[in-house]
Length: 438
Image (cartoon, rainbow, N blue to C red; front, side, top):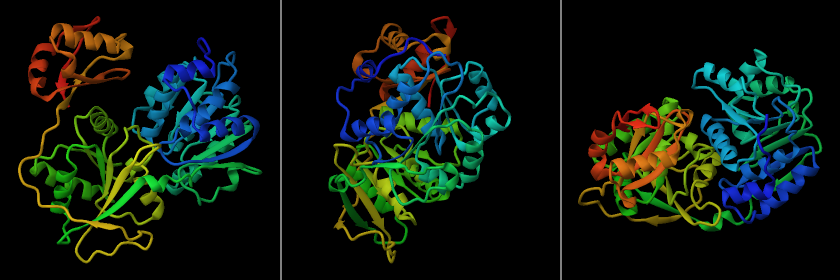
């Protein structure tokens, strides 16, 4: 089940973390000594690390079954937590399972049973119902972003999951907001709450309103993006149709961007986030799916192109900037005659000039490589290919993201076409790889 088990200090050193924040220190102690825990802390404050470290301490390295279950509301969050556990190098195996990919992939991975299983409610309920592994050894359950799971109507599946867990003796619920009622079937009696939601986060967030002279806010958004330049940010819309309409308009204006919403294929959603992380795009046009549970860097700003109907979603959107110790700005674009919901407090009005000139293109673009970990390919192998065979210098090679069966590499936009010609169908390790731009 487990490889060489690492202790907490070794894990933190591997992550490059030399001091836990106050929330994490308190969470380690509370989770260790209590049965039912609710952890409330803003997005980006390190909740994942806070619950994983004490879980590792309670795992049995001799057990060859699933011992801890982490339930998440989205595919992206499942993938993110699996990646965090891999980076921690604890010695314990973890797998993420979720809707949107072939269940046959789950079955292959679950043949080598993980100590920690991460999954979305629907996919987990399916595996439990089919009895693809035993749940008798699961002692700990984490429901991450539990309020969202309940809001999305997953409570029926959650109830079914809990019925398959007769031996759970520790329950950990996390959220970046409070106020959601907890269903009785979770059995959260005598829970201990760790609450860091009021730790002066709002003081780091600046909110500004931009007035559009018409009901159509497209041009006002473009004017604002020109002011903000190539700083990374998210433009939030309420509906998939709004995102697609806005994306077409930004294409006409030649503004490099990516989209992210629940109606997209999982592969396309992942690629949008990869391009945002590596700097190939600076603007992500997204639904509220992007407001939490996705692995992206600190955003300099977020823009409410459309105002959400609920205060919680407004809060989660704003949580994508002004995270941890950084400052950030939330912009609200107000159309002609538009009325904001009551929960939107009045903010300073910002005037933006009409843009002139061309949008400054991104320096980076992203190349796909059809080889990954399962082919025994490392990041060093990929860097060597670009440096030695394509004669790149360090300034022309950006972030490399290595996946199980492929890799994504940021390279200078100006040389991307030449690199594809040079490297497509070359051998990397023992595999002939395809290289193309995404």
